[in-house]
Image (cartoon, rainbow, N blue to C red):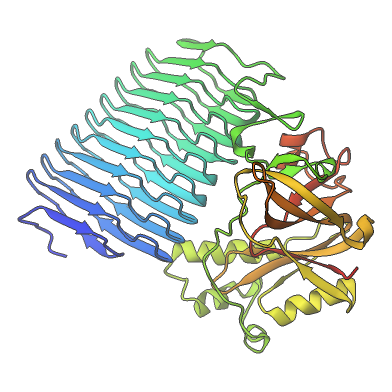
Length: 521
């Protein structure tokens, strides 16, 4: 692309491109990216030296890479040495399956170039963000993260050398990873390490999230007159764990306040002055939680994904979880083809070569994670296999259950995320303990299922009725795991139902395009 744009640029309904030295040295004006790489499978873009050394330049990214499957963006030397102007990322990568974002040398040596991230990676599934040398050596670089990672699933963020050596850097994180499932965030050399007069504010930090791990390394170390405020910090039903190492060590006039502070946090080499803790959350606190089916559950657990077997009775009113298939549309390959494709971590180089993943970090990670999942040792009593062809799936089911089998799945998605009524219920094999083979989709370039068989289950087929009209809207298939003794105590089912492994049975619906194989009645 031309490194000097004489006019403002408006990219609407735009797909993945690479911009080198785009907007560098611009004076005034602005560029807008709307509906950028929307609804694509692999959205990839690179902005190298974007808006570098610009003056009064505005950058706007609206609905950026929304609803993409795998999205990768690389902002290298973004707004370096920029003066004035501002950048606005609105609805940035929402509902993306695997986001991967890199902001390297972000706003380094910048001067009062404010940045705003609104609706940042909301409702996403399993991804990463990296902010390297973020606002390093900047002067008055205010940044706002609003609804950061809200309701996301296993989202990870890394802020390295965040605000290091900066002067007057002001940063606000509002609703930071709220209602998310197991968010993981790492702040290295965070909070103006060596900086002067910076201000950081975390509002409703990880509020309502399920679990989560945050690490603050060298937080505010050797800073001067820094101020940090954590408001409503980690207020969730299932608190995560946080680690602050070298917290405020060697700083001068460091001021830090924690309000409504949660459990499971450790402070190593901790600054003994300038820190206040208000309304420390005590064990057993259920503030901000809602009672569901006799147990407390946070917002992430609603609508309820797990339930007790006793609820599968005619007339029961319960919440149906979101059973809609979120995976990209793919197809099985014939076994004659899959049998010739490499599929093992020991052959990872060949796997990446087949799918051209050596230069695609996100696809590389998808392949690696799925192969590791497929090779992970089975749980006690479990039999498992990943299958990429219908022939392999049927053969696996037959090897476990014999030839007299049938496949079952929930009929449609009606009732999803709504309150429904249970109609007639029928237990497979008379409701007796049985074996089944359940198959769940895994993310891979072609259709791949993770199939596994566990002992001591009961399978049910239940009519799903509209609560008001009592009209049948769906036929649901549910599986109840009777023996949960080998499950992890941190499993989401126990966060909703309690009390722990081996003490209760756990039931769940079979979601759209997932299935369970059983013997015929």
